[in-house]
Length: 546
Image 1 (tube, one colour):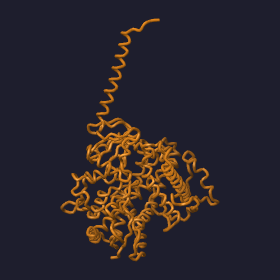
Image 2: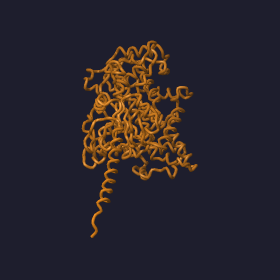
Image 3: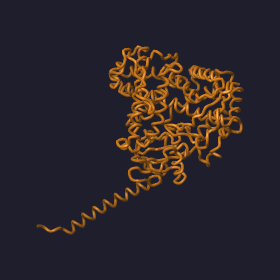
Image 4: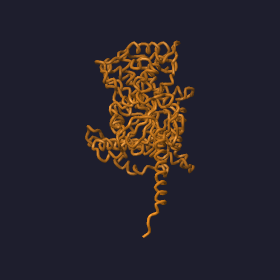
């Protein structure tokens, strides 16, 4: 038996120590190059310390301690939080930060499709198409089609005013009525159809959207700890609601798409068909879609069938027509990008467009009406501007109304619609300022902190539309004000949202004075409810004819 060689053992030990020491030093250097931040717990990270009801307030308080850029572990996801507008604009102008957030719901439920959860070539392709189509509809400020788009919006507002007048000064759920009218405008622009008023399927569909938006907020923890869905019954129930709601939405879209294809005399390209819908139209002798009321508070037995013939067609262009025609062209030509135009992708894209177009706009208007009712002097100032500047109901050019725009901007500042911002994903190792941001990091633009920063805004808790006006009454555009996304993932529907909001407000305020029907909300209620968006407390309103 040979003895051990002490010299070789020493050399081996020295080599292992050197390699291990080098690795530890490298990791310490990498860790030190990350943004500062609080320690979390094993596995769950900082999640237990975040208030689920008001997460933006927790994250804002952390920013006060660690500065405008900090890092935290949110379950399995390393997250960098930005609360300075310069850092946000610098980051989101880079390709490295244009990825989707690495959340479970973006791929576990959305499968990386649509536009909100897409990235890479698919996202660039779909964004380019949407931007082009919306501009052709009239969202470009100098487009010849803009007047047509304004008229389409005006029709929806006219129906709203008729319903408000019928109330004869009685308390009404005005935000819900606004969402209903706006929703049908969005339906026309996206699908080329609108629903009759008080239609059963339309009310059912709106319920799905509202509950889905709420449940997405409830399901937030599963984004960071996906394994929890196997153990938590409440999370399992929420996931079930989301998945069933998604399936029902896609089925409804399939029925609308089928009818639209008949109008355009198109057939679904062979490679574009969605296999899960193979037997969809066999549920009813006439091919109607079954609509199940799936709410937590309703029985699955509450159901009806959707007859697409009840839909009211629009004369204008729509997103759906453009998608179907582009789909046919790409598949007929054997285009490599035809894979971006499948029916499945279309369902997710239409859902993203509808949700983004309606949810954020209706939430903004709900907060706006609340603040206008709480500050009647501001409402009167806006009304005087509308009456003195705009000729009649057909004129709704918001660029002529700086006071109105200032009031809307102040509403979006004091109650950020998406207070934690829409997170992005880092697609490669990069740097932001002096800090290293690893690939796979989620980057969160904390809008609440930026919009409530006392160093940027004097008396941030006070509603002051005048902060958005210069001495001559012209609208200001402060760099620290970021109500929507900025950079490469900026929402292509921002201008459409502004047109719908202003078109509705100008006509409503021209004819009505809006007041709260009962006591104003408490300070706690004014904090809002967090879901996908920050929604205001539900209040009834009285509209007094002028």
